[in-house]
Amino acid sequence: MLIPLSFLLPLQLLFTASPSLQTQPQGTLHRREYFYVGENYVNTPGTNNGSQIAAGQVYVEHLVPARVTQSLPILMIHGHGMTGTNFLNTPDGRLGWADYLMAAGFEIYLIDQPSRARSAWQMGVDGDQSDFDTTYVASHFSAPEKFNLWPQSALHTQWPGNGTPGDPIFDNFYASTMPSLNSDEESSIKVKAAVGKLLDNIGPVILLTHSQSGQYGWILGDFKPSLVKTIIAVEPIGPPFINAVFPPLTPARPFGMTEIPIAFSPPISSASDLKIEVNPALTNASLGTTCFRQVNPPRQMVNLVGIPTLLVTSQAGYHAIYDDCSVDFLTEAGVPVTHVRLEDVGIFGNGHMMFMEKNNLEIAEKVVLDWIQRTIH
Ligand SMILES: *[C@@H]1O[C@H](CO)[C@@H](O)[C@H](O)[C@H]1NC(C)=O
Ligand SMILES: *[C@@H]1O[C@H](CO)[C@@H](O)[C@H](O)[C@H]1NC(C)=O
Image 1 (cartoon, rainbow, N blue to C red):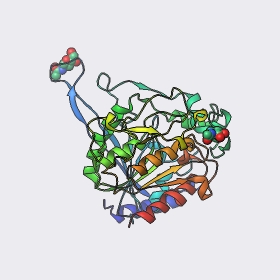
Image 2: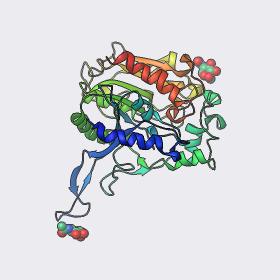
Image 3: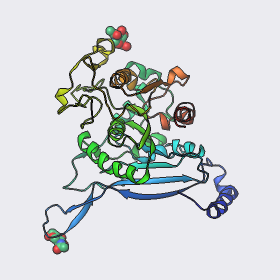
Image 4: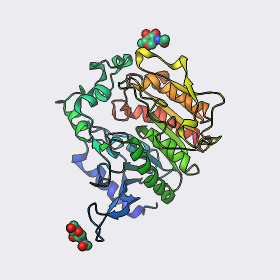
């Protein structure tokens, strides 16, 4: 998108001149627009007289820095309970990953997942939703060191504030969480449809996913392989085929890393065609992890084999326990994955919400931007 400089320059002057902004983080001068993609008109539930509503649409926020110097935009998709605000500013008002990457010259697209937040949840059309409660958020994300649900949680130091209710930073973060569809199958189907259309409209992207949306990275890369140039998967949902760490350890992701079918080679006609066995080296019952792998020879996730992928794991989050298993599964299936554990590159104490923690911009620079610069030419 072309932004006329005559429009931007006076705004920039206005910004730097404003005394009230001088105590705030300056941020990256940019233009914001929003739009919706993927709506389908359906009969208003309970009517049959021509009354219609729209469902399935995704809210898209497009941020265009004053100086675009990178050819590919970055599409960021947040995880469960979250919205696109994850990547704007942090809950304590510092700059987020979107600002940092705009300063490096990237256009940014953020979404709110379908049926959540600014993407309408339509009663009688969309499935049931639920919330993360405050204990879940504190124990899994902001203050795991106080709950000790997994061994590495003791190493968590990077959350701003004490991470529990009553702390203004926690309260601001918790207030940003949103009811989310219970079914990852339903949300996957809706993201595939709506974000698939978004990709058709905007062209190739760098796709950045987190947690729940990790599976959408594999689904969208499989669906639109020519439009997903690289995937940066920040602690993507896993491990393959089964939930881990937090009981109940129920089956999940029947296609390995996804709830809905993606292409394998040789092809499968149902999930049960994937023959799997326990990978003993990455299984630890006392940690609540069973690592499944495909039996040899593993089927290939054939549409993802040309998409360079970065998988990022924090030192102290619960993914530290099982992301090795997800990486092993992806690698065996032919996906070219580079796995960065933050502690291996000198970044310590982070949890699952690393992009809003105290050292968020260090991770953006040393891990995310570094990967993009080495991968996209
Ligand atoms: C259709 O029926 C609904 C429910 O009775 C009513 O609210 C709505 O106004 C009707 N719409 C039209 C176009 O007749
Ligand atoms: C399982 O994890 C626990 C806790 O980290 C560790 O003490 C134990 O050695 C592990 N067991 C195996 C078989 O790796």
